[in-house]
Length: 151
Image (cartoon, rainbow, N blue to C red; front, side, top):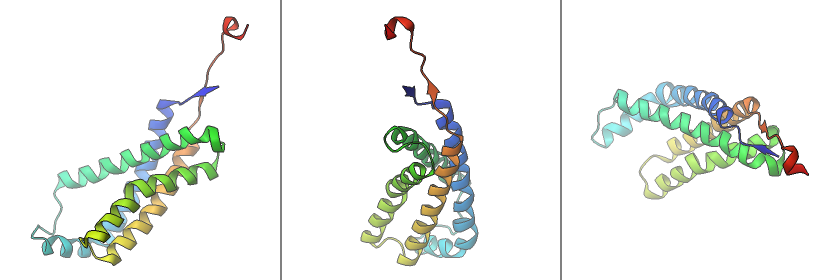
């Protein structure tokens, strides 16, 4: 029987988070930059995000990556190691971290539908790809069974 390799969960999760953060930066900080500035100004805020907000977004990306790889490690005993299980874990992580919050924002009418759809679909891709990369790094620790326990 194997135990979750916490170090590899963190390592794989950081790789997944790096992928998530890079894709999210390109999407939100480059492609949708002007759209986000208009949305923020419409709410009476500055069109420029402070560095502390960007740091929190990056922290969230890394935490989402770690959670996705942890989920992969947790379900691989049921579904087996490999890309199919990583995709399942990535999809579940996306549903919890992106889809459900976007659904709530849609229901509340807080953000334009176009922005919600774009960001939800992009995050589906980056979280699944990030989880695949993080799962590739993940290896479990084998637990040695002592002779007295085996007898």
